[in-house]
Image (cartoon, rainbow, N blue to C red; front, side):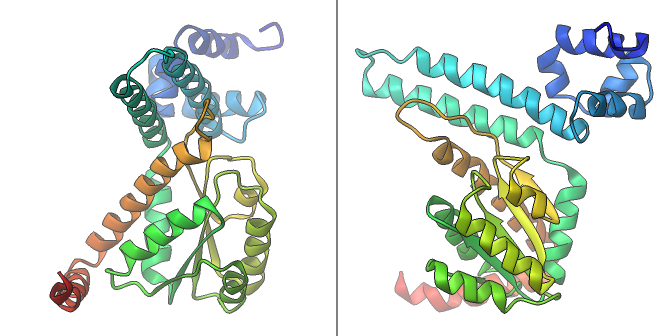
Length: 269
């Protein structure tokens, strides 16, 4: 506080008094309430060491999520029945979805939809548990007019990445954003000139820094359950959002594509 200007002290005190409100509000709403310019609030977050308001807000949400999820699972006791435990796990997942939703930015969603619909091909990549999310994305977008690809074998993923070009888009999913295999995939993609979209829970990871566009999923590690499992639910929801947006972008072509798929697989049901 002593190192802040009078205006900055006003902002700081407001954040300390209303952390939850700040973490769930836009910079415009907060600036209006404090009667300051958006740029003043933005510069304040920069002074604290964040790249901008979005990253500052993420830090608040992570702190809030940590507190909420911890309190949920601290209440699980040895004599809790299966239903009670399950309900508390659901509460944790619901909180992760709410926190992730707060981080969605319209311009990012528009840019991602532009890259998807304009690309010659969109390739989904993921290692380990993230590969399950990549498979889900591929399964969804296979019904769209967009040309997509996805492979489970890491060596084939590397080969696929090396064959991309400037007209393509790579979508890499990694909870930590730090695994060696995933970083290698991103490096190969960058060399080809293809656009790179990253979906991760770590905004300051090496993978996020390499991306042209990053989507963040909120998750916290809890007992008996890794944070990667929790983040998977948020990641699947982000992919659902992109799928629906892209399908509405090209509604007529999407309807034809879906109908062709349905006609083909209907005899198997």
